[in-house]
Length: 192
Image 1 (tube, helix red, strand yellow):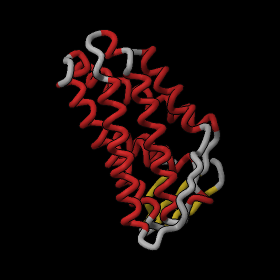
Image 2 (tube, helix red, strand yellow; image 1 turned 60 degrees about the vertical axis):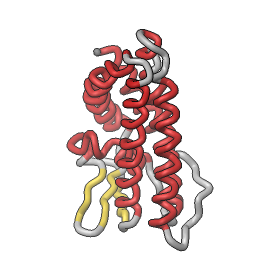
Image 3 (tube, one colour; image 1 turned 90 degrees about the horizontal axis):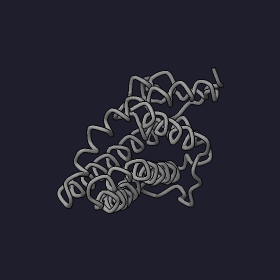
Image 4 (cartoon, one colour; image 1 turned 120 degrees about the vertical axis):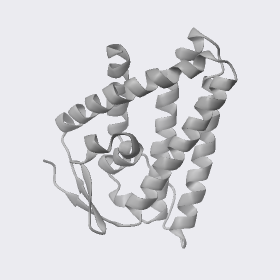
């Protein structure tokens, strides 16, 4: 599992390396627009994951990392688009993007980077060294979960449907987190 954890860690660091650009502008009804963005991204994530899980046996297992990477890219773009709908794209940070992506599965790991304080979120800018530590902890946790879930890929069609459903629900959860974060004031602090 060490190799899988390291590859997942590398993908997280790759995501942390850039904040996706968005063409979304502040919407008249940002909540409605955020829900539409989330729904569209969730359907895309389900299609990607379900399609990549179709090959049976070992071939299906080999699609696990590309699946994670593609879904995370879709989700990161969704987060950027939701920030845009709330008029917060100009201040969007990698900390916010990664918080939205992984808060529901690894909140403890991220609590020192983004924290809710009353009615606002405090975003602490972090150094690359801090991100390496966070990415490593996330990588190990997500590798365990991914290996457990990857067993469903051994079952043709049924496994693909399960993987697609998981990607759909996961993306909806990321969208809900993004909506929660961007509907509130975000205060950015200097790197620690």
